[in-house]
Image (cartoon, rainbow, N blue to C red):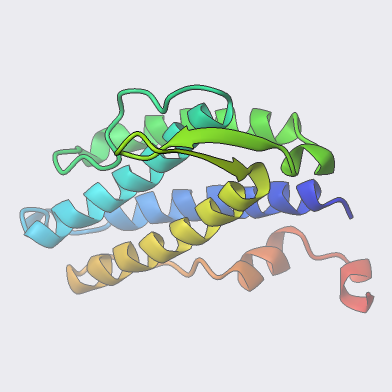
Length: 170
């Protein structure tokens, strides 16, 4: 299997996790949505979509746009449309890539203006791990606020979405 095929699969998993994460946030009872932790969880969900939006722009030669890395005042109702648009752009991007393009470099600038180059594959892998980290934080907050936590383990997703008899034997 080509490596890019694996990254596409992992992004399909991430899309499923995003759907579940947004549903978890929606499940928090209205009475608990004024709690500052709920605002933090929504801001973390905003941060995840912002990172995907900004890094895709940078990886395609842009400057990351005007979207902040995290918006503490994000409304939950605005996130679904942003996630849908971001995911569609990432599917197109990943479908345009092959294993060779994973090794290509892109340029980015740190906050102080220092310039760096990074391989596409490194940033794609970083985004996958980064999302899992913050979704775990969001799940903990949702649980603390009385919302419904949903399992987002990769093995369970794989079992119900990817598994075939040939996957099980080798």
